[in-house]
Image 1 (cartoon, rainbow, N blue to C red):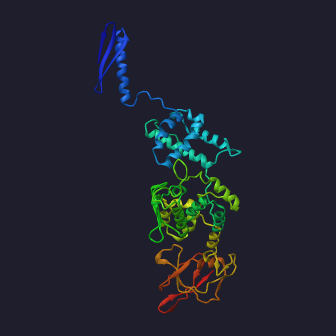
Image 2: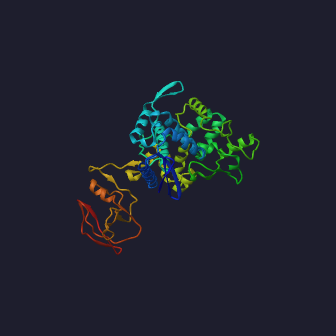
Image 3: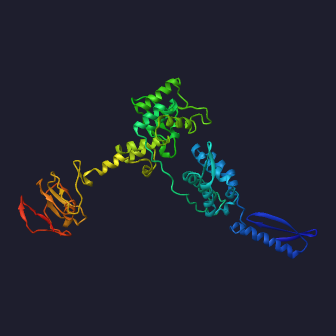
Length: 448
């Protein structure tokens, strides 16, 4: 360090991290100049160690518009749309957009969610109050992602926790065949073609909208279509064409002059193909004319998944639907009432040949005629002490009492003859009446 005088003013000069630092103190007092030099060197040292003054954090609105929005626009179209739809309402709410990033807390985020739940907005000619929980949750997820980006980019030291506004309303609408036929009869030609493709391939609407002719192959008998990209990397897949889908695509291909390139569903939009807004009014009119209960076009993907789920294994289902995880099936596959009734009509619930076996409380129960052979307890007993028994074959045999029937239902069939082991069961016993039958020990079970 060096303090020197230039004229009547003291200056200082020193090296820091290989860099020469020179300043004028604008002081005529030597001691004051030395203190200023020491203070400057201390401030530089603290900054290198992360102890210097914190930079002023930008406001949330400025950070979203100047940094996150340009970054999101460079991503794929669906990602950019997701960020754009979430950033717009966040910037519009000044109580949170004007806050510095380091001043945003979980309380201010909850205040934003409460405001959106009570906000009045115009829908057509009507004024509605409050946004849907799913809409608010999507915006909160965008906010959470932006705060994490701020932390990753070094703008924010720590991101506050973001809690969702509540449980979302799940799509459980499944369109049956009769409803779909009535819907197609009232739909416009474009809407009918798109709905047929969605209903028989399970494509996401965006995947269907972006289909191009090079992705469609009419050769090889059945033909196929290729989904090049989608919501996840698993969305890339090749699917065979059904007869109806092949007919729809071939008709459009012939009417378009058999093109080799271009979109299957072109439209005068910025993207060059149809989008969600293209068929919104057409879909609404088709529902009104057909009298079919309201559903979204995306519900046709749920319908397809529900229809094929019982016929394929889990991994094939993920491949066809373009899922990265089987857990997504819990959202898309819905059991209908007929299927639930079929499950509860099986013999495991007391139904035999269309008749339900009566309940407990001492009521008489029928023993199925076909039960023969050796049975083993399935009550989790030790293998060396399993209770084995030759079940009676007399069709007219009836057992009474809930306790005895429960013990009988604990047995399952053995395919080979084995020896009988004695094992005491609660409220019942084996009588030591043993006899030899074909070289094996058998016994009679009697309940208390």
